[in-house]
Length: 416
Image (cartoon, rainbow, N blue to C red; front, side, top):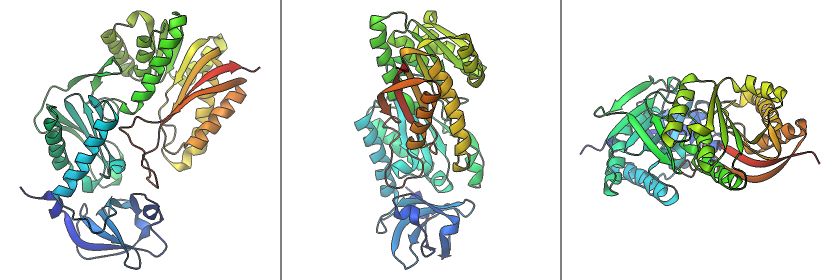
């Protein structure tokens, strides 16, 4: 078998400018274009080359792409590592073994880019289907070999993958000098996929759904909501829930399956609401669910004005910021929706709120929630602070993007 990994290693050496490389020295994975002093030797974009500090100190190996501001994505910090198929096999195997240890693998994220030391690559498993998102040139060259390895590892565990679909259609690929791509990898197959998570069934649209088709990162947080509703409804079968930005209904369904008496699910997308309805039918909870297609930012003030009150309110908005430059504007947006959301919670009721923006860090997010509570004249008792599911591991020490999801459940009290 041709060793595509070894073939992609070149003899060129990239040298950092003096005083640069602070990110990778702190444990990060990226080297930016303005940190590079020179590259000695021949290379092609996508190749794996050796990285050295300004004084020749070896820093490791990474993918080069002269078309991207992220000039290098580090593959390993071990300068003595032999970069070949065995190296790649062990990377993929370690990712799979980690998932088997920490989470239900029926549907999960199998590879999470830099946090699994496979930069720019996401692979999600939905039952017997893999969905791939490749966002960097170097990893794009190796993705089909990575898929082969994964299928082999899963087969050894009795899991047969019936098809692989690519969702490399994110705009960020254009910044890498790459075309957006979407379609089958290998043979075509029936893309209808049904998964079960925390006892809740979902139809997953891997072709047209957001990202790779489903937000697997909220798995544990959805379970926390389901368990909260199970306890609440044991003493009050008429518990009311408002789920905002419901998308395909995941939090709303967990609330209903947990025993809520009534659940209103709100989203601006007709397609998402239609899918949420189908998922409700799949779980036999349509009698306790209502669906509203509306812009949450417009609807919440209207509901506040009408004096509506719920036992539980859930806010799961899209990322309000995807860069450091727009954080102030995002903080205002998060503050406003949380003020409105808190005003809709009965005193003694419960409030779940989250941010999926990496740039809205934990400190900023909790500051915004505190400001919202003050403005809404509410007191908050924190029940639990959660992050993304463990199949989306948070890599400490300088990783750029792996920690992004913050999820908090509160009891809400009128000022007293």
